[in-house]
View 1 (cartoon, rainbow, N blue to C red):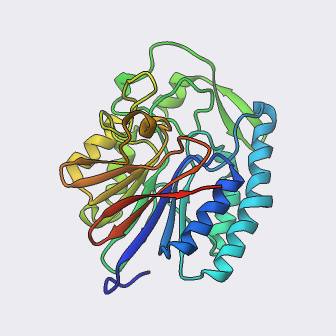
View 2: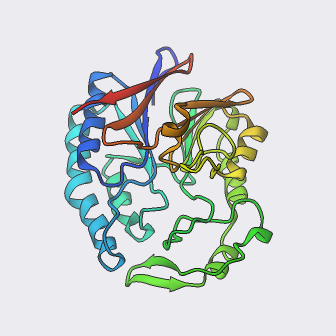
Length: 287
C-alpha cells in the first residue's frame, strides 16, 4: 500500500487478448515510467482458436507465459502491484490459475473485490458486460433489469471443467445477478467516494463506448453507478474501437473521470494517470 505523502502513478490498459509482446511492453513501460501499479481491465487471454481447444490454450498462456513473466517482473519490482481481472473473452473455468498466482503474491484480482491502493484510496473491479452476440456467456449479465432478457434466441455456451457446455441464454441471464445488482454490492465493500473502479464495460453513451458503426455499446448500469456513487476515477476497456472513433481517452460524468484504454491497433495502447491531480496521458510503446 502506498502512503498518501507521495504521488500515485497508475498504468492502465485492457484487452491484451494474450498478446505476449503487449504484456512485455507493458511491464517495460511500468519500469521506465516509474509507475506504482499496473491495472489490466479484462480480456487477458488469447482468442481466435476453435472453442474446443480455447480453454486449454488460455490455461497454457497463463501457466507458461503470464505467470513466468509476472514472476520475473515482481522479483525486480516488489513495490509495484499488478491488479487485473478477466473479461468477456476469458474463460472463467481458468480462474483457479489466476488465483494460484494471487496466492504467490504475483497479482491482485479485482472482480467483485476491493484492495487498499493508498492510505486513503481503494481499488475495486467488475469484469462482466451486458449481453453480446458472442457465444461465451461466462462474464455476461443482464444490464439493468430482468425485463431486458434478449428477445432473440441464439447459441450460447459456458466454460466448465469438462469443456464448453451449451446453455440456454435466457436461463443463464435470469439465474445470475444483473450488472446493476452486482455493482451495488461492490459499492458496499469500500467507500465509493474514495475508490477507483475498474469495470470491463465502459459507461453507456460516452466517448468511450462508440462502435465502428457509431452506435454506443457501453453499460447503462455502469453509467448509473457512476452517476449515483460519484467515484473519483473509473477505468474501462471492452469497446476496442472507441478511441479510433472519437480520439478520446477520457470522459467526465459529473465529477468522475472515466478512461477507456482498450486496444485499437498493433501498438500497445495504455494510459498513465497521475494522482492526486488525475492527469491523464497516453503511454505508447513502439516496436
